[in-house]
Length: 405
Image 1 (tube, rainbow, N blue to C red):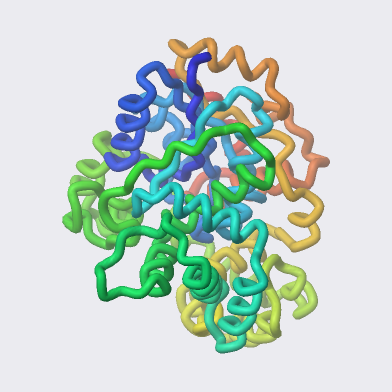
Image 2 (image 1 turned 120 degrees about the vertical axis):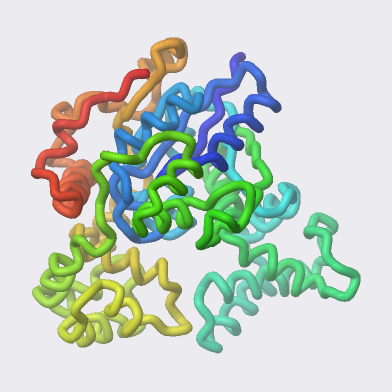
């Protein structure tokens, strides 16, 4: 059986680090085909994508991917656990994906697998430690990492990453759990376990800092540094990090929808804000009060930020408001039931042919989707808002054809 390797991605933009992952996959599985499940117009970090989905899909295809499917917005714009569950569920439902590749800062699959098992079946020690950490005002991510460290310290697992002799296992585990790609990798493993999937994990060790703000920080760029260079007008540096031209590509300015967002929040009742995903503990009152005084999204985020709430969580919450994504919508659709085909390579017809037997509906032409489906209507809103921020007319999703390379 020919390996079909799935990658859940954003590629905003696709850069040399992503190309390295493709190369490592091919080195391990020479005859593998790569299938990407990519975020559309909004991303897991809570912001609109800088570049349009079709452009990002074409870059992946030209780098060697066989096919790119779009992860619906309801899962792309979520916390790590639900982002991972949405992407893994989509790959699982396809029925022909054999492997899932993802980057991790540490080369420690056994450790990540053990953490995933603990989080899916929490021990009493973990649960108590989590409650204790949350009670001190820590963010959920920090509290979870501390609780895992406590549980592992009690059981002393042999799978923990290597640490200096002076470091305790709590410090070592906490450090590993604080790294963003490790966190997401563990969420992928949790999703595979939760779904009972036979897809095999195929992690690759990431080189470079995920949050690096400078393209000179390492031999491989970060997407955030590449975006920063592009937005600062250093197109040459951004293009060098990507390996292809960015000049002339339509793009969404980060501040473009600030006034739209603020008008939306000021028009919402406190009850409506409270109905947004992950809005709890009176956060709706804080947002409602501060939105009336803020003049930009950035200033609003700064004013509502506390130790308790991570920046990405708050940024996602604001985009949920912008897109009319409430908790009820997401609760009623815990996993995707369709995927849009963004592009494919003509040379990889077998991968395309396999879609005919997929266990999930594949939509190749946007007009064939059901606008009565709240998830599909959400995708359409996301495209129109992205287009507004890029200075383009509405109807982008309907105009965007399948990319063929």
